[in-house]
Length: 438
Image (cartoon, rainbow, N blue to C red; front, side, top):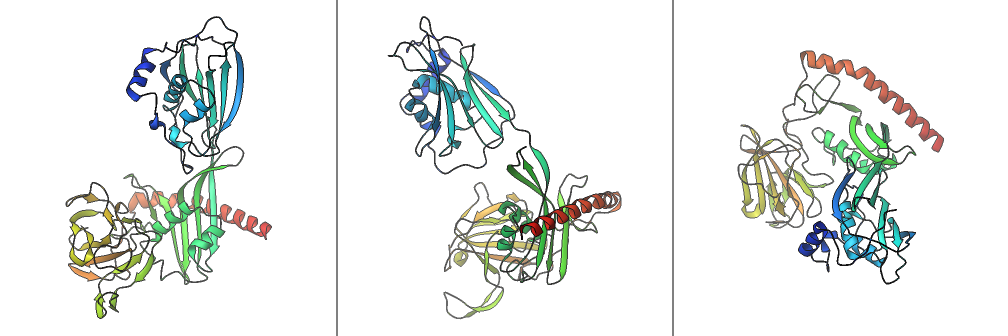
């Protein structure tokens, strides 16, 4: 082990300079532990820095290993100094760690292992030799003091195994409940809803007895721990006897989409439901106005959802109006082509950076659910305008998306048999597991 003279005033210029700039007393930059973060940034490789600390002569140190647990309100600086690590060494170690991991991602209950060199001089606090911890199910990180007189951070990653995951179910009460019962992750369910949002009104079209199935990617560690889910490969729904099935495919233009067996893209000019997880609270047509009190034509569709729920652009286009618009409150209108426009009203706010003339992509967040203007509660009032006339978003016939042709269609068709074999194998495995669990 390298010995270090712990002269409190002797720090390398790099560390001393950063401390003078940041101020030793606070270290607010290192964050306070709050709610757990389940999606840490993946580091691609080990990295090092040059935070040097001057050191020893003369004493015979002993090495102590401590396992310490993160408590509510802890920062990494606080955790280290509670264990008698000198602030200057703690700062240098944290600076090295920050190259590969954000210390603010620490979770309550997370374990850190500290190796401390305890000098014979009892008036001197122990030196930090290393700290190590499990950042997530894949990565273990160690920060150690090297012979070069600096702290360096090393990252070790477990190899991940990629495979198919399959879920299927019959709707008894709701799609959400059926999907959760089938073990389908919520993120995958949201992606599946997005795929079918061009064809399906999830408030009216879903009936008891309807079925669904989905094949998607997942990655696990060698011991079987699920780390992350990936893209949907295949999704199908049978609604009132009508079957819809789509397969993930990337044409030569590089734009990945979902296509039926004939090569027709699921994507339409516009989405019927530009907000996820919302409840259809009022349809298109005549109704008694909830504020005005008399019967009035309702020329859009209302989706109720909590304030702040993201609103998506229903299609590619250009914003031709953004701002307050009378009883509509905060309002955005998008021009999609020479025929279609869509409008979004009662918003609580707009996505930062959007202005009149901004180009937006289908599915891009443009604003957030609110209750501005003439409104009784948080919801989105959504309109589809065809040649300037408001049409029912749930029934207007929308132009179809891309259709694969020629060699592109042949290439897609050639991939289907192998893909359908994967689906069949996964379906059989899923049926076997379900039978064994009954």
